[in-house]
Amino acid sequence: MTTLLAPAPAPERTAKPAPALAPGGGLRRRVALRLLALVALGLLWEISARVLNNPAFIPSPAAVWHQLIVTSTTHDGIRGYSGHLLIEHLGVSLRRIVIGSAIGIAGGLVLGVLLGTVGWLRVIAEPVVTFVRALPPLAYFSLFIIWFGIDETPKLWLLSIAALPPVAVATAAAVHGAPSGLVEAARALGASRWQSTRDVVLPSALPEIFTGIRLAVGVAYSSVVAAETINGVPGIGGMIRDAQRYSQTDVVVLGLFAIGLSGLLIDALLRIAEERLIPWRGIS
Image (cartoon, rainbow, N blue to C red; front, side, top):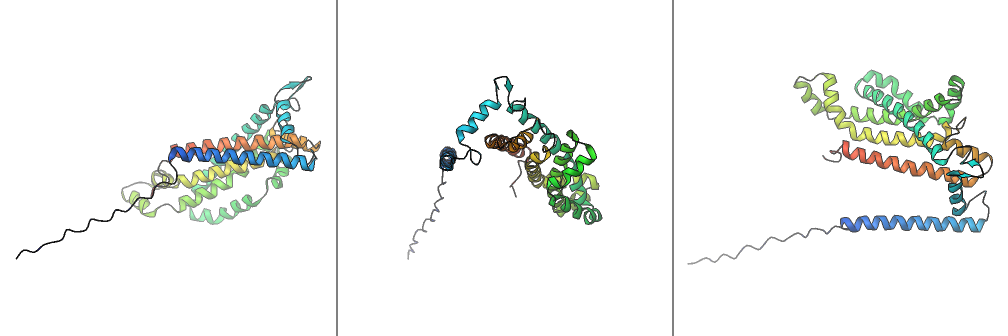
């Protein structure tokens, strides 16, 4: 007697969901959406300026563009704004931001590693870091002026102190939360405490540390106008403060655009550096 065996049913093929957007189409769509959003914001800006008809309140895009030309060139014997071109104002502010951020980031890294590895120090210093982080920059800028005068020193101190807490907090949390199994394995293989911190803890903490660095640079950018309140010309923040005294709203808006666009550029550079230096981010 022959037993007929029916062929096993073919396994059902699970259809893979098609990607929502092809890589090329996704990029083109993102660019198109951003351009469309910029055009819509520009139209809204122009309409608001025309309806209100009050340049001291909302200057038109044409007025801001005119100030861009005026502050970037020499007209009627006047060079830029307050004797300095717009690019020079921006360059001085960027130099202050870079130096202040570098000092704050370096101090935050050292302090964060200590807070994350030394328990008794974390108990003592963590409230102090939180206290400083909660202070607005102008609150202690006046104190720095009393101590250091009105030259570059108080500005750099302000930007450094503003940039330090985000890095310290992010580094301390990342170091304290490093995988204990990897640390114990390194110690079992003969690594010292410093070697295990350098070779195991810090690489695992780098993604969170880099997030703190980006936050620190953003805080320094947001503090530059406060840092250049006193004797800030040349400087983009000083230019904004000076224009505010004379109700030159178009110059104020131009300065805000300069700070915002340069901030976007530096954040993009930090993102690129993060992708190059931390290729393992997001890999579990």
